[in-house]
Amino acid sequence: MRLRVEWIALAVCASLSALVALGGNGYQQQIVFSTALFVVLAYGWNVISGLTGYLSFGQIAFFGLGAYVAVGAILVLKLPWYAAAVVAPLAAVCVAIPLGSVMLRLQGVFFTLGMFGLGRIGDIVASSVSGGAMGTSIPEVATPRESASVMIVLALGAIVFTHLLINSKLGLRFMAIRDDEPAARAAGVPTGRIKVTAFAISAALAALCGVMYVWNVGYLDPTSAFSGTTELQVVLMVLVGGIGSMWGPLFGAVLIALLGQVLWARFPLEEQVILGSITVLMAVAMPGGISAILQARGKLTRRAVWSPPPDARSIDVPTRIRTVADGDPVLVCEALVKRFGGVAAVDGVDLRIARGEVVGIIGPNGAGKSTLFDLITGFAAPSAGRVLFANVPIGRQTPDAIARRGIARTFQTSRLFATLSVWETVLLAASSVNAARGAAIAEARRILAQVGLLDVWSRLPEALPPGKQRLLEIARALALRPDVLLLDEAMAGMTADEIAQVHAALRFAVGNGCAVVAIEHVLPAIATIADRVYVLDFGTVIAEGPPQRVFSDPIVLDAYIGVGTSVLDEVAAGAR
Ligand code: ADP
Ligand code: MG
Image 1: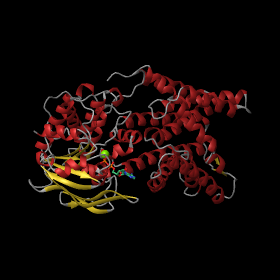
Image 2: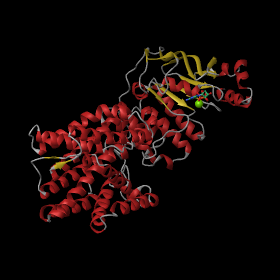
Image 3: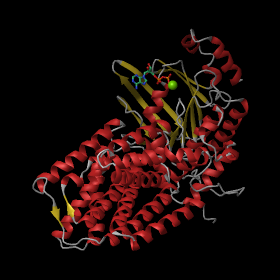
Image 4: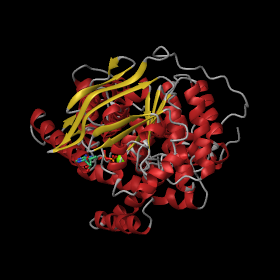
């Protein structure tokens, strides 16, 4: 593998820093230490806020926690500092798992505010426990040379770790959650667990920095352990460098840390004001940070995870074990009801879908079709009634668990991942149901070839025409190798060629026993391949049967009056 220029540059910078750490004076060594410390803090913050998209203003709480655990470990347990450097991140992980499970239910600004409060709480608790704002000293203190050297190694570790993370299944899942959390769930990503993992990694890195801080200064007080200024600095560094990117945290941390040193030396009083102003200006002038500017020029662009797709023509993909016998219903809805306030969007719907069946669901706008899909896939909880999959009630399973078990869906309004390539989008879903990397890759490649998206595998969704974007959503659903595939107006806006491609892919899936349920609002593009059709109106099934019979049913014609009977003519034409 060719070593890319950024890694060579990194090695050079690290070597220079190491020379300073080993041979410089105490002041220079401190600058190296604090810069490297900020690099690790920035990469830690980037995991939860950049890669996973949960903006936290409270990661400093874990820095403080790590610092206090280190002091406790050194003073009370008489551990050496390096043992504290293991214990403190572990403690942070133990706190982060339950805490994250609660906090990460909060969305957007509520999570941000909640985390901000946590940092403040840490300060207050530490003050009261350790006896006021007074600090504590520890006996074992690093020489500037020691702490700077160790910190450089840790910073390099954080960079390499992030590189590995961004190129892993876990990193792909983080980015999918950041881009569109419901879509990630529909692709089978256990978002709850994955978000907590990101939170815990982030916390561990912050705690490690807390330990290093204590070891470096040999002293700890609540204000510096839970410093809001440090938190803000880290956030600004990542924003300036490029949030969510591989190299942004490094650029931002080094730039702002060194700039801060220069400003502090020359304008000690105005340093914060100048730094703040520069940051505001940079945020306005270049929203994506330094990384975005470089990426716009084609530099440092992220390589797709587990890419390129393999070449192999015929790939052996294990087929899913049959969940039900032929002829048995794979999906059953019993008297399903969903009320929104006083409105019953779905009002007692019974549905029976057999293995390998293709079923159309039609009905006027607002008939409750999409809500029905939300109920089946766990995105909404029924007010009454139940859904059975392979004869087992799905109960209150999460949407991602339902997706992994075998009910895949698309959304009426497009939900794609803005920063994931075509390949990664399909791979994400394939890796939810294939534990082995090779199997996931093979499955993703096969599906892309099948729907005709292989030649655009490296593109981002925005670079695709609308029809191909819809095709990609279908491909993502198919990659779960579902027993039931729910399509919500998936073929609206597609060209005839694209529809033919979808039909071919559906026939293949149906051949493997997958049942397809397709909502079509205007022209039921599914009519030509549908075995049966359900007609929904005001949340109830008003007709059901083979397309020809349903489309000549007077009740159905009645429901469509006002929508335009030409629609039905088209349907009937399609069915013939
Ligand atoms: P369709 O997909 O058949 O066009 P929907 O299932 O989207 O219909 O909507 C059915 C009815 O439920 C509509 O009247 C809609 O306004 C209402 N509805 C759907 N989702 C919600 C919601 N989250 N809150 C309140 N009302 C909703
Ligand atoms: Mg709808």
